[in-house]
Length: 186
Image (cartoon, rainbow, N blue to C red):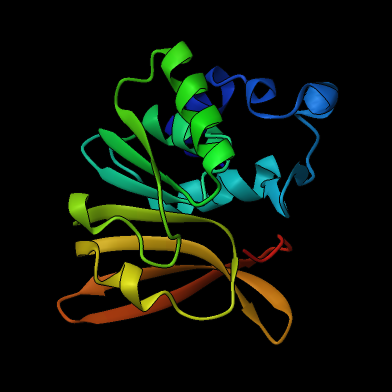
């Protein structure tokens, strides 16, 4: 990871604030951290490489899908102009909103909703990040990308996770695999 914006953002967001108290001592371990309800905080190196691949600019609006406790939204908020964190678990959404509020992250908002549907009310997005592996291409989310917008996720292909960047060009979306990554499926 060489993108200074990504490195700076991750260095300034206290990861331990986004995990259960019992796991705060291992918040910086380079492994997925179980948050409950089958969800994880993605290991830092995979998350950082996904962020770098998204090429988020300071003027971008970002949809952060499956933001869980809000860590990814907090980090993205340090890079982008605005971030909408989408979370289906009501407890995670409430917790994320509180932590972000306590941190003064005024360019990030957490919305509770269906992860597959995205959040069309704020579309189009310059970047969409998905915090978990997916099996099918997220067609409903592609429709929420701006022209030239990027969607980054780990796509499961024959049981192997492959971080992929999809880019919208008019009505078409192209895919570019980046690296292999083993993260749990949503």
